[in-house]
Image (cartoon, rainbow, N blue to C red; front, top):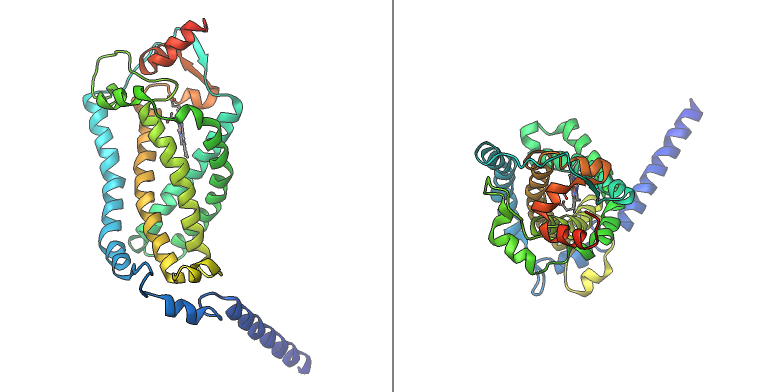
Length: 301
Ligand code: HEM
């Protein structure tokens, strides 16, 4: 009995000491508490209190609802009216994505397939009744972030050069890539068209911003000495992260749905290039006519 009481006292003291240590190391509850409060909403601070509460409570849920249902609905209408682009599978197949491209792409794909639905569950947490299900989604969202971290930098570097915009992209945008027409005609684009480039920049640079803002919100309580030097408070940083994460989350979710529609439905068979690395000759001839011209000059086709 004495032993048990001793153990109980020891563990309580241990827990209390741990708690005190944690409080002391905490940027929110520890020694930075006062500077954080003093800096909050001060002249020169971000003064995000009003905007954060307003956007968070009145805009984001509705905007995510509109994207989640509106974007797939718009594509359904496109599919029913214009229909998919179908290219011959009888001509030459051209190798465009090497094994490294494909592995990195798959990692990003797997990460997004977890990140996007679990992120949406968090946005609509109250409709899911909160609780364990939402908590599990939050943890999965955190784990998938690391799969995305592994893929985003190599993806950025491997496609960077080919994703720089050029004059062909202006022409592509003027005809909306030919996606509103049922006719097949040569579209001005090199290896990647303007739409693909926009997705690249949004998913890599936007994705990196999502990682940083997401991690700030996940860890919440850490020391950021430069904040106080800039006259900002910890809560400023959290609120700015919350707003940016949601705004970019909206953009990236809409573009991710678009990317899935294009690769799975709008261009029949496009998904094969993600698996085998090969694209159909006719697809390049029509959708990437300038790239095709170069391949012809090099006698690849
Ligand atoms: C499982 C989900 C995904 C599928 C099914 C998919 C499918 C595809 C396909 C078929 C292509 C080749 C398109 C073409 O050149 O005709 C492609 C390209 C590409 N994918 Fe994905 N992808 C997925 C996820 C992602 C994610 C999460 C990212 C970025 C984080 C990404 C970034 C890109 C980029 C930058 C390209 C090259 C440009 C483009 O075609 O849009 N993909 N994807």
